[in-house]
Image (cartoon, rainbow, N blue to C red; front, top):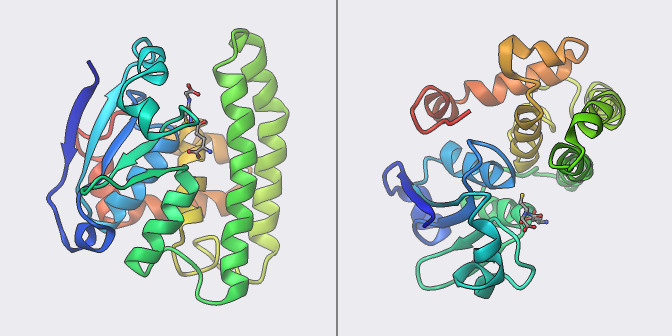
Length: 232
Ligand SMILES: N[C@@H](CCC(=O)N[C@@H](CS)C(=O)NCC(=O)O)C(=O)O
């Protein structure tokens, strides 16, 4: 049976997004696309309920049962909202909640474009990360990824953030205002274990350190990381 858990107390942010979401995702520590979605809720001070599937039980739930019925692609995260509305596709969910909360996006068209562009780069990177990390040949494929694609993406994003007029001053992707793209980027840096151990994995990437520091210093995110709800 999937493990269930509720985080925080229902708030005005829950009202803005239509209630307390139920997040169906892997029981995969505080990692993955599901955690990027949770991070936005945590930052906004919204409560959520987790339904966590172990990797062992997941194939059964993917084939049949509520998740299979809720999402024709058979993927997670899947979100159930009160009243039965179903949300799928993590990046679309982040943008959707951002609009409902009137936050987490740029103001100008250029800012919105830039947040979307950085998010798209992270999407490409995460796809390659997952392929290597969950490969049957992980022992060879993940180190190859770390030295190859991961370095390429780190260099590209660092260069973008240092070079763009919007990003240069930081700390976030579009400057002083946090967007959904910051959650997406931060979560991948976390999942690649680059921000742990004093940002050791980001020694050559000071602009990414600045971004990670800013995200992790936000009051609700800081509180989450020092709570029992943070699972590594
Ligand atoms: N574009 C989708 C991708 C969803 C996806 O691939 N999810 C993975 C977990 S992060 C999954 O469902 N894996 C299990 C499976 O494919 O059976 C999103 O962002 O939500």
